[in-house]
Length: 229
Image 1: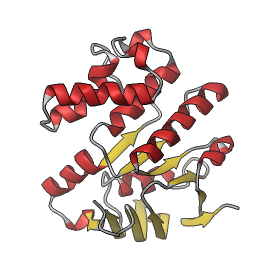
Image 2: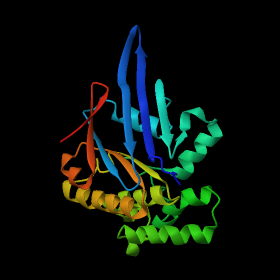
Image 3: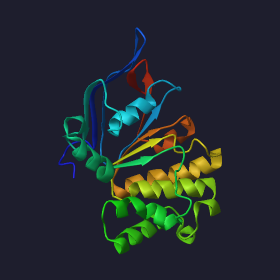
């Protein structure tokens, strides 16, 4: 529960890298709030800082300055174990590559994070089947990744990201390896699921055709976030 806080709040977030005697400023005092049920797109050329922003928001990479609050909790002020708990239970990650385990079928790939979290096996499998059904994969639950198309594999990965009922979804080029028609199907399914489950989402993409599925689109420009028209 977010208790009235934005699901994600970035406050004065900065990320600097040292390269020899030169300091490279990738993010420079970024501020962003994302509410429950809201989908925010993140665009910008390669190297602009999109991935750095996502990694900081997901508590994978410590920022140089600033705060990352998920449901009001400042992740980088917590102990490592507490931060790991937030990543496991409150944040779902979707990557450009689906990273499905080839020896498991779709339903077990989706259920795996919940099983690792210690939830009862029957409950995990039932929730995995429900999510696969929402993603239009009812008939593919017992297919292994090699038996699925690229778009189907990515929809399995999206369902997996939602299995622990996260408050926040962070997606890095989730349709980057798909053709345009498949990208539209997958992104539509992702946006529908995020809204249905009441999560918030920050999605980095190069595909501006997908902007219609987003509530806001932000670009990373010289270390700053700028809202696109």
